[in-house]
Amino acid sequence: MEDSSRQGTAGGAVPFYAPTGNEVALFEHAHRNRLPLLLKGPTGCGKTRFVAHMAARLGRPLHTVSCHDDLTAADLTGRYLLKGGDTVWTDGPLTRSVREGAICYLDEVVEARKDVTVVLHPLTDDRRLLPLERTGELLEAPAAFMLVVSYNPGYQNILKSLKPSTRQRFVAIEFGFPKPDAETGIVVQESGLPADRVAPLVQLGNALRALKGQDLEEGVSTRLLVYCASLIRDGMPRDEAILASMIEPLTDDPEVKKALLRVAELTLG
Ligand SMILES: Nc1ncnc2c1ncn2[C@@H]1O[C@H](COP(=O)(O)OP(=O)(O)OP(=O)(O)O)[C@@H](O)[C@H]1O
Ligand SMILES: [Mg+2]
Image 1: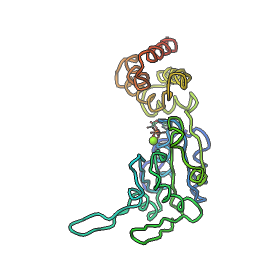
Image 2 (image 1 turned 90 degrees about the vertical axis):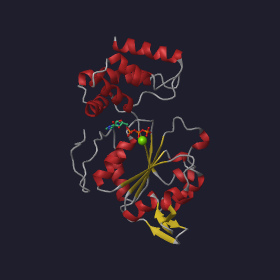
Image 3 (image 1 turned 45 degrees about the horizontal axis):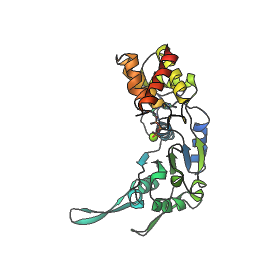
Image 4 (image 1 turned 30 degrees about the horizontal axis):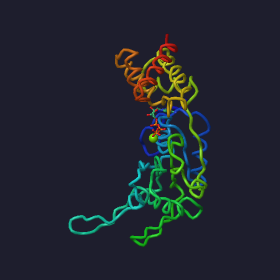
């Protein structure tokens, strides 16, 4: 497990992240070789935490943007804003990241509008250029700059997947849920609930994950396991915590809910 107390060169504490594979080394290789990185994986499996951890570890500032279908290229690059009667150019998070040699993280990148990919293309091939049409600048990304994007391939419809010409500009890695022992360690660390009380929750999480695809769009995330353990640690009765954090967030269908509760009974006894 990672040493969560390690200090980054930027001076802040490195957020706790327990690696589940070779992702730390891959990120470091990609950063050293100026390659952009694509993270794929289900909700709540640790993608955002991983990027925060790596940015701190590498001592780089991190600018995160949650993409949505109204997000335009100007939201990323910047725009002229009125300030006390003057119009002043204001960098967006992507431009700021390029200028600072920071890590720019675009979460749910498939949600962004088409014109966003036009901005990303010259920045994510060997040119590493960010043209700012409005100011006439052509920024060359410094070695320390890195673009990281993520998306959840599960619930996106096919129309929303990335174009090959975009995705083939990235080194990519798929995230899954950690193995039970590792996930127990993560939930213990995050919630403060002892391991002997966390282990059965993780076991239930895996039993519920096995139902994914039949009745459920997405299985229980590590995030929800952390919620559940935190509620229990705070004094909530276990079964109430499970209902509120591992059953209700997964489904609105009364029949499916009944089935999930039955799985919980069978798993936990
Ligand atoms: N490997 C891990 N190490 C440490 N904490 C983890 C790990 N995986 C998951 N977590 C915990 O799960 C929570 C959710 O993780 P995170 O927010 O990074 O998920 P995500 O993959 O970004 O999800 P989404 O796609 O919904 O944004 C974290 O706040 C953390 O408590
Ligand atoms: Mg996230």
